[in-house]
Length: 286
Image 1: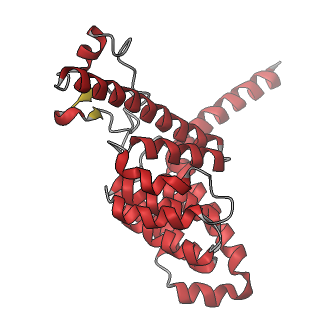
Image 2: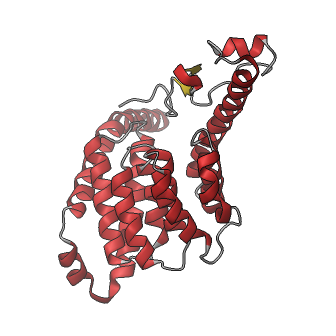
C-alpha cells in the first residue's frame, strides 16, 4: 500500500515537472530552429554547391523540408513570421532553387506564401524568372509572373506576354489562351484572382495550405458578388451605392455576405469593394 502511494506521488511530481518544462523546452527548440535556419540563408550559393557536390538535388529537398518545419513551428506557436523571418525564408528558397532550378515546390510555396502574406512580390518574381529557365516546358512560372503583374502591381501590359507564353506550353489550362486579351475587359483583378486560386488549389496537396487557399478563394468570390451588384446598381441608377445596405434594400443582393477572415466588406469611393480584414486572418498574435 505504501509502495503504491509512493509511486502515485512520484508520477504526480514527474507530470508537474514535465508540464513546467514544456514551455522552456519549446522556447529553446524554437530559438534553435530559427537560428539554424537563418544561418543557412546567408551561406554563399557557390559554397553550398561546392559542399553538396553531386547531391545538390538531395540537399535542396532537405532545405525545403527545413523551410516547411520553420513555417510549421510558427503556425504551432500561433505567431506570424516577422519581416526578418520572411527574408530568411526567401534567402533559403533562393539557395534551394540555385541548387535545383527545376524543383517546383519552392516556387509554388513562394507564390502561395510570400506574395500573399509577406508582400514580397518582387522577390518572388526573381525566383519565378529562375523557374522559367529551370522549367522551360512548365506553364506555371509564366502564369504566376503574369498573375503577379496584373493582380499585385496592376500592370496588365506586363502580365499579357507572360500569360501568352504560358498558354502555349504543355498542359496549360484552355482559358489561358484568351485570358491575356480579355484582361482589359475586367473592372478589377478579382476574376483573375479567382482563376489563379482555383489553379493553385488544384496543384496543392498539403491540407493546411489548401484550406488557407480555399478561404481566400471564398473571400474573393464574395467580393466578386458584391462588385457585380455594385456595377449593376451603377448601370441602373447612374450612381454608386453609398453603402452595402443600399444593395440589400434595392434587392441587388439578399444579404451582405460574411468575410471568412472575420472582417467587414465596405464600399470605397468609385464603387471598389474593400474588406477591413485585408484578406488576412484576424486576431493573430504578432
